[in-house]
Length: 264
Image (cartoon, rainbow, N blue to C red; front, side, top):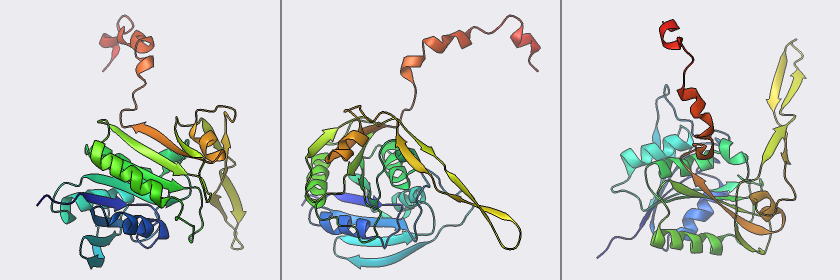
């Protein structure tokens, strides 16, 4: 009998978050599930991993076809640890999420949920991130789940191009206008640091900020899709080379006369 698909799930909100538990419950009918997620929230950790901190794994729940583990490290640590220590075979898919809050535009660069997905993609495993534009810890994930299951089945069946993962964001809505495959919007964060003064005489700082979509009229971006009620799918590459700039920059291959002799 052929093995059922095996899916590894992690996130950056922690193993207790509603999003990751809704995801695992929704997918357990179609695959064996191993969850390995941070023991507490790790938002903003991107692709960071622990190089100088000992890591621990804790089994939180086990039933037929599903295990839930926590790790004291980062989201990427969770993927690495699961692949090395927990899984009996190579997973058919790695999923990050469901994240509480969107990971569209430049937010994807900071996201630990995208860190999970990029790590899986770097291991040549089909990988997807799911995020909902709602930071509420009791957010309603019900409208997403039929889409999540449908998209997961398609990736399990058809795979993804090598070196490409999917960053999938859902608007906060009861119904969606449809699905758009789109590019990352150009955006910036501003007012990112707030300074406060402690009664004991020193200053301290909070990282906060506000996001601005720098091209609000562009209709082919993830920000536009989400604003207009669409599910946004952004194909994301591991190779970040600016291929279109290579020829322009070949001038650096012609070093100035005498440069080699002048270098120590």
